[in-house]
Length: 320
Image 1 (tube, one colour):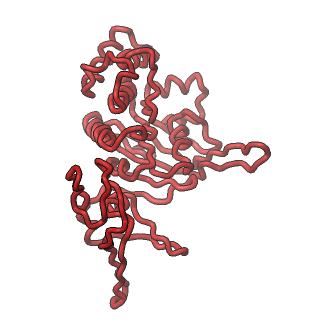
Image 2 (image 1 turned 135 degrees about the vertical axis):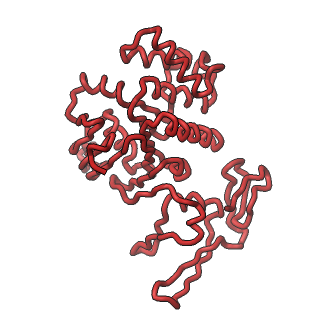
């Protein structure tokens, strides 16, 4: 893929924070390169402190990187001053944050209308467009409620409507399900997936959750300010036959995120056996039969053990 084919591409992104009280400077991002195709859904996955939110702000024009360039629709946004950057963001990028960032004193509907008005749209167009986008997200009966009267999932739908209102080329979501329970997380992510398919807008999602990342076309793992691996959508059945892992010098195993999401359903206790008869040794891992390792059902939270195929409380499938 050439740079001209990309909706967005970033080259050599560094972000350095000055240390406090004479302490050493902190390098949050260390030469990040990233391409996003038009209509692609990408997840950036990493633990707290890995640089995810800093990268999101740099890619979305909310923060200038210390070095490097970010191009969106051919425009280097790192060279725009704030007067030109603000209207560019409003036209090209929709943001969805974990907290929602809704104005609490006005209804969800008025939150969307105000976003459109800030972009220079007429009041009549803004009202019509707000109705359309909220209706498309199933919020017709709830859109005139104040945010504090909405559930977590409903608040996030209003945030999504606000991000979609101006028809952006790119939607950036920062931990969009961080405050939601398991059921609402799947509902919102299913909505993201449907929207991505229907409107062909590019999505860039930042998350710490391996499960949430499985909804994306491609996930990129960020560790200590660097990309360490990349994963694309796979057929779950392929995991049974063969899967590559990395064994570090200290003996630790590094597994792809989609494997971790599946393995976690069986608990943390595993048995390994190795066959060294061939030129290439084969290692087989199976869930330990011991019931000593107690986990939680991802749906209802009831205790489960690695040998359980179904949750005894809610009937959720635990093994594939």
